Image 1 (cartoon, rainbow, N blue to C red):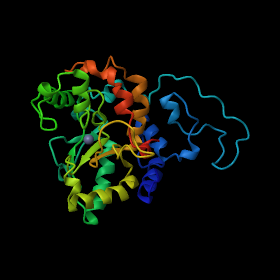
Image 2 (cartoon, helix red, strand yellow):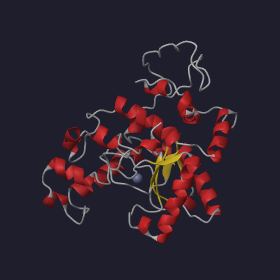
Image 3 (spheres, rainbow, N blue to C red):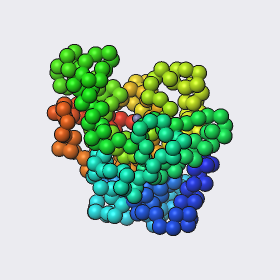
Image 4 (tube, rainbow, N blue to C red):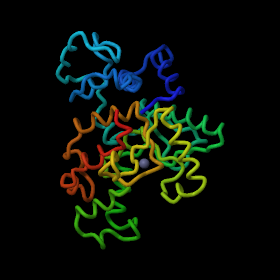
Amino acid sequence: MRLGPAFALLGACVLSACSANPAPDEAAAQSAFITPASESAQPTSDPVAAFSDPAPGVPPSGEPAAEEPPAPEPAAPSTSHVALKYLIGDIDPAGDPKFARIPDKYQGGSRVWGHKDAVAAFVRMAEDAEQNGYRLKIVSSFRSFSDQKQIWEDKWSGKTLVGGKKLNVSTPDAGQRAVKILTYSSMPATSRHHWGTDFDINSVSPAYFNTKEGKRIYDWLVGHASEYGFCQVYSHKGDEGERTSGYEEEKWHWSYLPVASWYLKQYPVDVGYDHITGFQGAEAAKGIDVIKTYVEAINPECLQ
Ligand SMILES: [Zn+2]
């Protein structure tokens, strides 16, 4: 993904003294985001090392290496390693320093918390959008495990209709019922909304994005969101080079990659099927391989 000038400026700011003492985890994430892909460290299974600055001795891009860089150290606990609770939404954002409240003027629903870096980036984007005649609001943001459990179980039990049906009646098989809910809704412990890095913008209705206003907003986001670090993770799927599995396309769901990319790398390392439990239908998670088939099935353009 190409970074626009606005985000390049932010990057310069982050590297200098704008934030005198960024928390180690955020600093690592930001550093990762502004490192051009051509200068990235060698692929590694260590999620922290993968997001570190290039090792000393790595030449500027385009020049052959004089010698192989030293092999990365084995994975070790690090202060930049995000705790499991942040990956699975087991937190209270109101009392957590990683989180910030979305300013009132940009709230479009009852969810008002996001990762502080994502909220700050969204505000910059929304202010610029407004100056150009586009109104952006966040209709959903951070959701805890228990928020997601409520959404999921309401669909599981038939309280919320899915495709006009009560799934507990129409689809008794657990695996099939879970897959139907997974069209648009995540299982608890597997939603990017747990991270606070992902926002649903203006509407969660596909129909809105077929209206004149919805198309206008979407076109602006496609053209400019990357300048602020946001990417549409649930893009169109099925055609060549596109996603092959996962949720249906969500034109409203935008992810703040400087933090979310790093969470996604760490997710399959730290989260197992023993963590995806404690809700109705959880027994279907492993058979569907929900981590690989849904959590990791994002827009290839959003992979870093
Ligand atoms: Zn969403």
